[in-house]
Image (tube, rainbow, N blue to C red; front, top):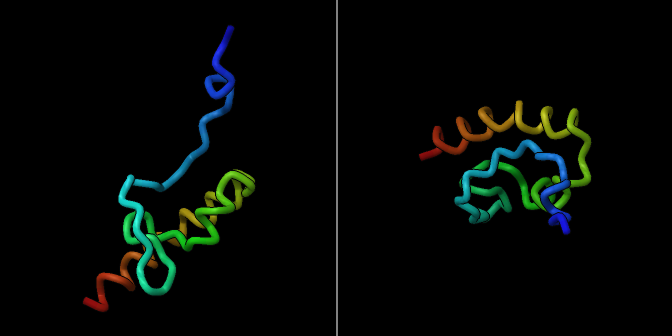
Amino acid sequence: MSEPAAELPAIESPCIQVCRLDEAGTCIGCFRTATEIGSWLNFSPEQRREIIARLPQRAAVRFDEV
């Protein structure tokens, strides 16, 4: 009998296993919002790529504030 999860396609994710939300509700590891994280599996590949493309800018804003 095969494992059902083994049959699922891999989903691209920016998660780096540092999962903690800041006071604004943004993950300090991947810079996605809590809503984006919760909805990630429901987004199309195109939507996920659009979000991923915005993450470097979010990181720059966070680190420029320090």
